[in-house]
Length: 176
Image 1 (cartoon, rainbow, N blue to C red):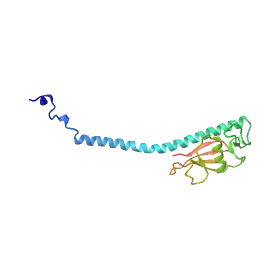
Image 2: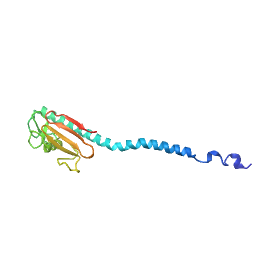
Image 3: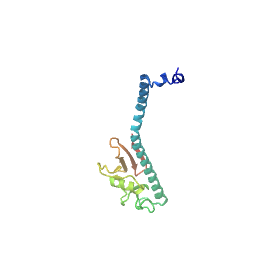
Image 4: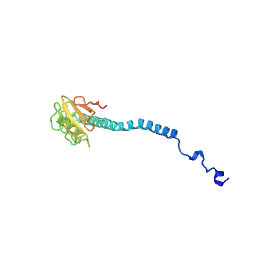
């Protein structure tokens, strides 16, 4: 008997590699893992857009409340250009909620909504009024006492929140 045969290095069953069944089993397991993980990674983009809208709406709501408190403490209702708030150009309606930056405290429109956005938010996401402006993050619309801010960076899905200038309420109305 040679030394190699005695030490077990000759054609030993464990030195033959994987069987076909073992390879198929590993491939099936990897397929199952991929089938469950890939949809989760694809959904991360949608989750990121959803979080962006929620975060922006929360920041906007906080800014509106700070403006309201500044207006109330200074008895600034129906006045223009609250000093030391934002750029100092925020105008307030009779309820002490921001309504514009151009001295017009009546019903809102798309321009006044954009003005409030720019007036109360520091380092705000970009915003514009035109329907088809792919260069901005949000679109402003307005009518009556309601401003609507529509997110543009995820076009197939309607994500938006509203601001009511009469009540100061900010509500995410669509963010699937």
